Length: 454
Image (cartoon, rainbow, N blue to C red; front, side):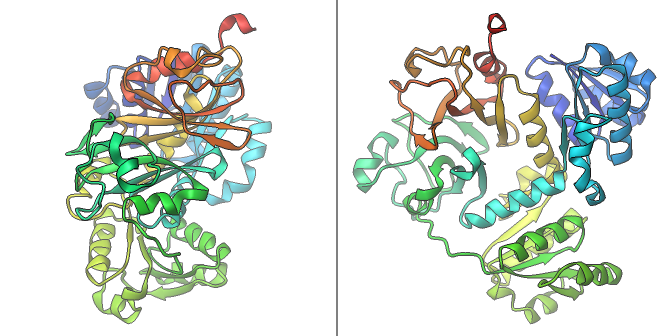
């Protein structure tokens, strides 16, 4: 599979790094020499220095042989023109574009049906607001992802030292707690990813990922000593585009929200565009202001300024002053591993949200969603089992699954099935697969439709 990436910024760099580890043929285009040098020094890919919106650069990169073109520069306009030029030069190449400006929100269908015929528009701001909404729906969770149109969730929780299941082999847990245990798909311990076996034990500080039906989620969370209350009051620090989108979502859900924004002009615009949200002009890291706004009564504080250091400090201050939960926006990937160490588990990243959206659309097979976990060490895929793929019509124990992979769920006609070795996957089933990054290319082959089908 040949993939051209236009834009060597954080998203382009990390997508290129991700794909080369899967032995994809990747070409990166960027006119910034420093960005190109960073890619060439760290990743084994072909590089083209030039504008990704230039037909000459696209031809040099091999657009006519490319299966996919990703336009992920920091300029919406450049991404749109890159897609238009690609559409003219190679109409069969699948085009994905990152577009962030809300002014384009109502035109995604037009972009798909007419020139530049963009197959998928990815708006990281919309995706990160969805992620924040999911984290609010499971207040005790560090990470949440949805599958099967929300009927099934992948949830990551940090184990407290008082949890009763600590130190007990997984195979004995159901009998010990007199309750059916959820399927634990992964454990993060000391920054390492573990796919647990029945003899493994859980320990305090572990980040545990498990699959749960939405209807039984609260009962499942109680196994991990997490008892959640509904979110009623939210404070948003930062009234930029993401803050505005989040406030709109909260208004739709009848959740009381306040926004603190330093820029007076932005405050005026927010007040004009939002109906129920309280807009406050001030500094979200001002202890006096937070105290005046009864920070202790806030169920969630979300820090969404354009400065990550401000977001980190404001979240730490809010926690110290008694906020029940904080969600911190971080863009720099180098900061993400540090967050747990300083006490900030709930972190969101527009760039990481964009990467997850992109991965979904470049996987072979009918993949409906793809979620990276633990710094992209692994993915959880939701896919449709096709008639001629190698995974159907035989028990799972007879399927040659690559090492580091686990089928964690089957959804058939709206019903969730916890898989066992004897489970039989039928054509049309939705399947949820956990896979280490090294095994992704092998999973793609299992999911893909065989050529003789055509």
